[in-house]
Length: 321
Length: 289
Image 1 (cartoon, rainbow over the protein chains, first blue to last red):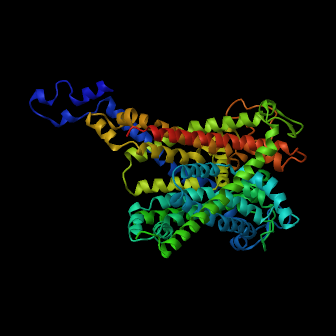
Image 2 (image 1 turned 90 degrees about the vertical axis):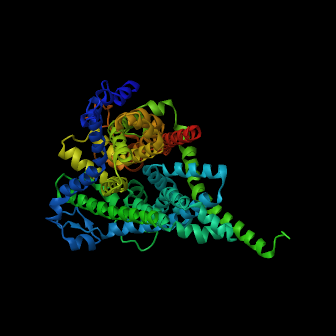
Image 3 (image 1 turned 90 degrees about the horizontal axis):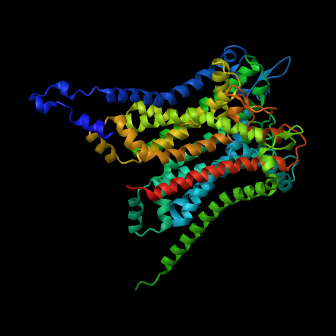
């Protein structure tokens, strides 16, 4: 490289020796310049790949679900009927209300568990823990976040299920409670990480100013740090919701997979994502059932898109403010 | 004069109370998970042996080992990496070194966030619609790996971008001042200084890809195959799907078997993540600037 640069910096017969400086003397359209332009194009393609893929996902799942949306599908029935009977021979019905209720109840319970625990843990790690303890806790939280969803589902099925039957004396342990706890434990580490980042982003001078006024450590935390990090914490919660909403394998295995409008946490339910995972393999490509599953996919895509967009806007708000 | 007043004492007590409360919450979050992991080790640990890791499943997957699933997972991850690492690093180089602070960059960032947030089963639907059907690849390692690659692309992009941005701007400026082009600067100065950071991101991606199940269910992973894959156009078994199958689809599997598979899976994932974290900490310790 040293050679390239030396040549570039003072080309043989450079401007100084010719007496008059011309615009072309600074034109460096040598091989390096063309390589640079080529690479710029290549990395630009990499850069826009994320946009291409996100549009691609929408286009391709819409393409597969298209025939149903403009054919068999009855919008009213789709969103308001709790009857998901795509394999019925005489009168197949495609209502996702029960599935939405299943997803919502599990995600709701998961958030009830995960929000207090993850925010509490984030506050402890960011504001109270010091030195080595903080380091170890952060590593532990990061490792917990890495446990694959299929393992969580397995835990729900083999460990939580008998545990719930035993503790609450119920006939079946694959319920909203089971999936909610599993999903809560699953989402909490990620939410803790993001929430901790948000607390860390609050400038130290806020804390110092409050402490200089005589506030104690917990007063600083509650009255200064938490309000200042509000948007980031909300972003963490929204990302947790998005994750719970889109989780597939864990809810497939832990909910009991029964179509049901739940009336208590001891009811089995079925989630939107789990329905696709369980049924797609059994449908014929192009059939109404197949296209209906893709339509659920479109619904999932749109909802998570909105959640992620909102989370991004909320977090961005705090940086500007 | 500096003796603690009653008010000081009360504040101190409240402080201790809060501290303990938050500590308790943290412990309640972490301890159950550690207990669950201990149960996995307790129930599955005994089955893990060389025959288990390198043997074929027998008796309708009720006995024997998991080698075809392990082998398939390595295939899937390797092919996914071949696609996502170059693409992800290119994207990160663009975002960190070329892109301006404008609406277009914001759209790219938004796309990355959304790509990471799209449910895994929707990625699976995309894989079926695009790779299996539209591009005619069929259910194969290639289709499954492409789906996985797109799903985990944000992990590589985000980790790489962070490590590129950690290289001080002065390094680049010094290089430009010597007359180097942008690419020469990136290749000789920025990337060498960021390569270990990129590596931690790649390891994280491997870990993530290893555990994914939903995206490969309909794109290339099979419940059971009597032979090993020979090319990227073959189907394959995979460890994560194998766990699902022997837990939910095959009756009469002895309890230790799925626990053993879960333990191997989680062991691989946690090992890779620990390695990635250790690498990151080592890097932080030895940073020159």
